[in-house]
Length: 157
Image (cartoon, rainbow, N blue to C red):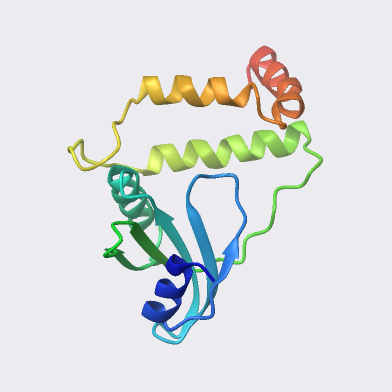
């Protein structure tokens, strides 16, 4: 067990299981005796404080899931949330499912109202978005998503 995993297990009095995910964050889930519930723990690297603070505020606006947030002595930022029993996105996507996902994203962006402050992510991070779009081109999922882009960009939906 890595040092970070051990530290979080001790602090949260939890049996944490690492979650494999494509993001650059470390994530864990498990039952926390400290909070008497199943938790989802997301760890941000020391140089991602703004991402951490933005996610913390967004989550607090949308739900009552935030149980704790703090910085470790090792400088990582930690967000502790009540866990949700999420279901994976199906491997076979349909235009109807992609449309439904787009509706959820749209509602999300209409609901969130964050102040523009130095400790949050830039509201319009064009350089960051451009870099992420470029990374998508080398993603193993790129070929699967292309047909949906063309479907929705030409139907006006």
